[in-house]
Length: 137
Image (cartoon, rainbow, N blue to C red):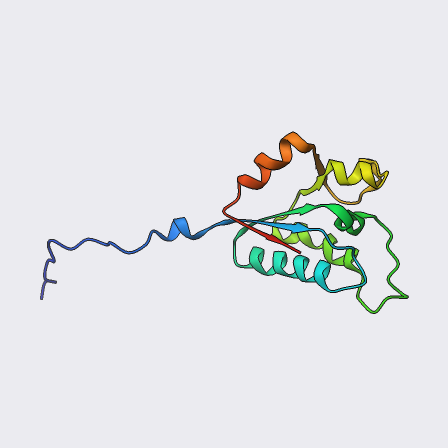
């Protein structure tokens, strides 16, 4: 028996390809002393696992998270550097850093671990405005 032909029907639901949003997480907290730094990185990993476009921007005290060879043995938290090392597995390849925060802390780009890109004041505003969602930690 042949299948009946349906006419006049069109799919009007949401376009699934439009569900991917860009998310920027601004990490301003030092790596140890509170749970904000860890919470921000955990959210990045979770969002990326659900195929969201995630970027991380390190500012203020948050840039200390990027220093290699951190020793968390005397702190209650786990070593956040190990967690940051796993970001490329979730397609988070480049870590963005506020250049002004680096200058204030007398840090040079070569001192930071990972694949970092330093943004100056003029680039920072346009960078942040380019995301669908922005959250701070």
